[in-house]
Every structure is written in structure tokens, then in C-alpha cells.
Image (cartoon, rainbow, N blue to C red; front, side, top):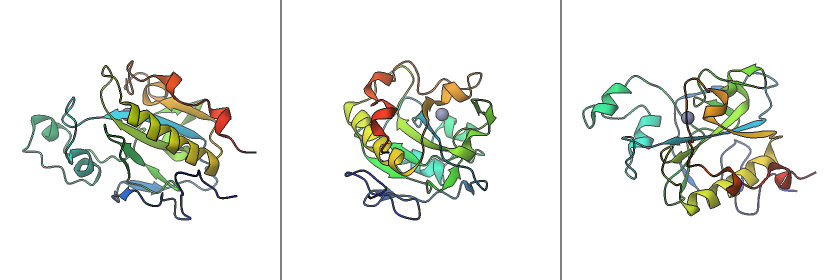
Length: 189
Ligand SMILES: [Zn+2]
């Protein structure tokens, strides 16, 4: 059995083949014996509420020009990343190997375990809490989930707001959880 879906193949280095890869320097090795068991859904748009352009890519590679927008100046010292970003058109870009920890969760807890970056994969949808996500985004997200659940023993798919409820609201009320295929359907025994 291949370790991934028919649509996406993930290589031994933890990168999906055939999609755009922009390597972010913002990652850590996962702690020894940390199994990836959690997928975390986020949203991001830069500047907030604006879509398109290369600002997310710049942000995740620590090269965002702070003079372009007042918001960029506010976040100029943040070093963050996510494993994946799905833009409004459904294009998928990878930034960090799934075998490493990306810096997406921050101070977080799930099922009593802190520092969710250690054992999760972060997926950013280009979007905002209160604006509907696009169908191509849901389609790509489901394909990605299908791939990741075949490689890793994923137990839960949650929002950033579920693991950092006092700090975060994403992916927001606009995210339709019923458009995600139930996890049990993805697990291959
Ligand atoms: Zn988030």
C-alpha cells in the first residue's frame, strides 16, 4: 500500500509531491516518539480580509515588508509557519515537512496535552472567520486530509479555536465542519 491517497503522494521526507513547495525556516524537529495524531485547521489572510498575493508566503519565510501595510508592521517580529496553506482558488502550498513541527498552534492544549505543535499538522485556509470558504478549498482540504490520515494515526481534526480557546477564533463560524469527511472514513486498516 502506498502511504498516501490516489490524489496526493507524500514522500519519505514528509513533502507532498507535485505541489508548490516554499520552505519555511520556522520549524522544529518533533520530539522523540511524538506521533502525529492531530490536524489543526486555521485561517489566515494578509492583510486581514484581503485575498491573493504573496504576503502569506512572505510571512512564513520571514520576509514580509513591514512598510507595505500597518498590519504587517504589527506582525513583523512574529516567526510562524504552517505545514500547508490552501488559497481561495484551492491551490495547495507546503511550507514545512509533515515530519517536523511547524509553528502554527502557539500556546495550546488538546486532551490535556500541551504544545500541540509537537504532535499536529497545521493547515491554513486563506480566509476570515465570518466569510464563507470556497468549495475548491473544501475539496482540496478533504484530499489533503485523506492523504495525511493514511500516513499518520490522526485521531482528531480541530480548529485553532479548539486548542487555544482564549486566544484564537479561527477557522471561525464560517467554517462548515460538515463539509469535512468524517475521520473514520479516511482510516485504512
Ligand atoms: Zn490559527
